[in-house]
Length: 344
Image (cartoon, rainbow, N blue to C red):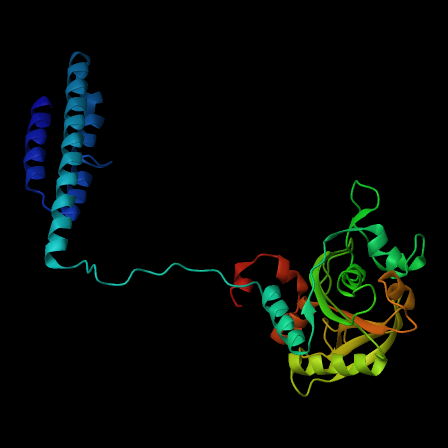
């Protein structure tokens, strides 16, 4: 068997010297050093040798296997260099071709909808005003005509922090008071602003509601502003957002910071008004709550309610995106599923 091993070694080295391609190299490796290769088969037969010959044969077999592996590695490097040089000479690599562009991300559908809203309201004379996500209880509730222990506080399930009186805002409405105080010129200047941002509520997640969501607040303060101005403004917005034939309806409602108050609905585009689970089979989808700014809120913002009036509204960008794109579950917006996000 030693003679067979030496002959195998000499033949394998001679064959390796003649190899000039990667494919032939792989065949040589499989035939010689692979699991069913010639060297492996010889090593498996060591048990048939007399005991006194096994040690010498095993030692030499391992030396042969190591020498062949080293020769294979060296030959592999040489063959790859030759193949690369040949490819360059034959022009198979065209260095003048443009590089492959990197895949870039896109805007989140909520961001796209918010930007569309900004554009529409800017055309209608409203400027963007940013307010904070972390608010005081006073600004989020008390100054909006919702004093401590008022039953209306049950309308907002609140995230409280470890600092007493500091909460995550439940709506963008506290920005109304901040905007009036900052932009109102001590109650002497009219203002028209929209206040976009994230809101947080400790409530159950369903196909129609999330515990965090975007909201866009609107506020207009001036002299002789009436409910008819609010209805006309919101109707014009709905037509610009959802099309000239968008059907809008107003329903009486209650909010502590507006009086009178109303809900604003748009005909459900998903079912055409026939009813589906998103619109709760009513044929309509609520897009905003609105009303005339309560005199108490005007006073807290620095305005004299006997001289000034205004309207306010709050709308959900995600629900509007659901209407426009036929999305049936609001949870998709925060699920981070690329199959959903890449559609936008």
